[in-house]
Length: 119
Image (tube, rainbow, N blue to C red):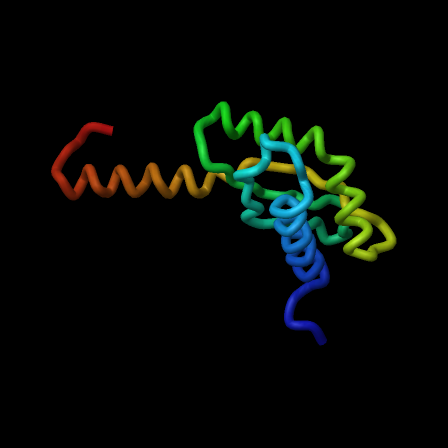
């Protein structure tokens, strides 16, 4: 028996394929700095929630989101050819805000340690 569910194995493979694809083949400059942080699949393997992070402000995040949407067909075809599943999961790109939250928490902790109550 496999150590973890099939959906997790397929999600890990999708993340690997997407990371490689964005790094090497996608020509859109809006998604140059995009990093795929995780992929979560539904148990029926129909929907893949692709969490991405991007270095920059909100405008940069919006540009990256639009770039991913415009490249969606190319990305999906490439992933499907590499994945070899009967049904290709629908890819839904979601901005991963965990890094931003972590940075904010770090700033809050630093301000508390300094004795500064301003947020």
